[in-house]
Amino acid sequence: MAKTKPTVFVVDDDAAVRSSLCWLISSLNWNVRAFPSAGDFLETVPPTDRGCAIVDVRMPGMSGLRLQREIRDHYPHVKTILMSAYGTREAAESALANGALGYLEKPINDDVLVDLLRKGIQSDNGNSNEPPLPF
Image (cartoon, rainbow, N blue to C red):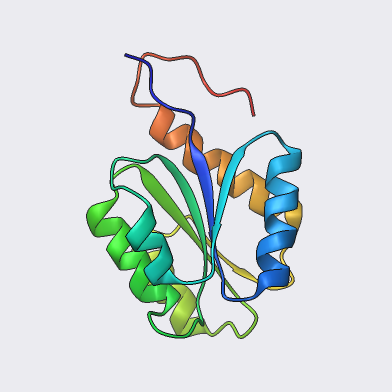
């Protein structure tokens, strides 16, 4: 049985950031879903989904760093990329120590983000007999 196409999940409380990232990702013909909070992501996305989550560090309620740990512990086929407009060395070190593919400061460099997304999606796809994804 073939795997479903991976999805890029955008989790950020800023509607303009969600919209901008969704536009970029969909322009590459990738599946994308956006969530305004960590809770919305956790309530909606089943642990069997595949892909990458781009997560803002500072959000009301559950922080992006906490969401990253939830994803790491319960979503075996979802990689994470953390982003913040208020990046700190401690937050970056924590994100990377907990398995993030990268920690990006806003405004995000689109080329760096796309490269990280490719890396994350390919790493999950690399465990199958399917050919590499065409992006």
